Image (cartoon, rainbow, N blue to C red):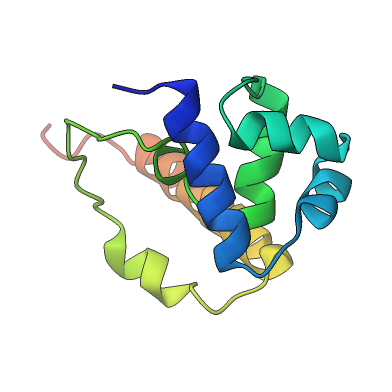
Amino acid sequence: MVDQKTIGTQIKRMRKARGMTQEQLAEKAGVGVTHISHIETGRSVPNLEMIIRFINTFGCSADELLCVEITKDVALRSNWLTELVEDCSDLEIKMIADMVVSLKGSMRRLEAEKPDEKK
């Protein structure tokens, strides 16, 4: 069960694990230090925008931040691809993704243009 106290405790744990102060986290999240304190103690609930800022700041997944136990394990068909681009910058990943999308589209167009080989 997810509750605001648990989420607040997790945010505090992740902040401290990254050697950040409440002031630093508040600056990155665009809020006041008091608000961060209230979130960490469970007196306030972060909105969706703030949760996304925390995820980006901590470099974590949503389930990790929110302490959510995922009940459905989704297998990644592209695990090897994920590992292949692991050391790429965001720009490199975008460029690779754009090339893959373009190549896939070209391949499908060529396949559609082939004469029906069953005749």
